[in-house]
Amino acid sequence: MRTRIKICGITTPEDGLAAARAGADAIGFICYPPSPRYVEPPIARQIAMQIPPFVARVAVFVNPSAKDVAAVIDSAGIDLLQFHGDEDPAFCASFGLPYLKAARMRPDLDLLEYLAPFRGAVGWLLDTYRENLYGGIGDAFDWVRIPGALERPIVLSGGLDITNVRAGIERVRPWAVDVSSGVEIEENGTIVRGRKDHLKIERFVAEVRNAEK
Image (cartoon, rainbow, N blue to C red):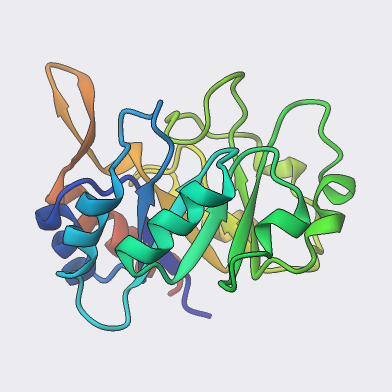
């Protein structure tokens, strides 16, 4: 099976195009204002309009209002919604678009119990837990904690980069992988959040493909 790839935290048309040209199946816009990768709806639209066909545009939210979600959908031509906070199933399903529900893998989380109400999601995204932070953390969680059989397709996220994505795919066999900080530019040893390194994107995609051989 071909593992799908989402490059998240896209903030510029150049980075979106680089992801698409490298072979990404989806790009993600962070629609959560506290995030350093946040993009306002008009900017997301500018980027989305330059993305070639058959590359999905995903809007990522954390505890938004219905008005905020509708504004992004109307502005940016979104294909898929991703909910990363404490949204309930009825809210997630209320916008007429398919959605992903994220689970942050905190130590006491009963994953099956938490995700059971979200059977209407097209997939479940598993991410690293850190209090008051939602995605783009740069740390992986223990993949052993993922049950062997889940009802919905799994998107593996959390601290993936070129050094570990192959191992993650071989261990979890997810439907897709999601990367943000793992393909960002580094300056003086510090990640520049929201700016993608195009070579890292290409190498990440290559590692995913190597895992399928």
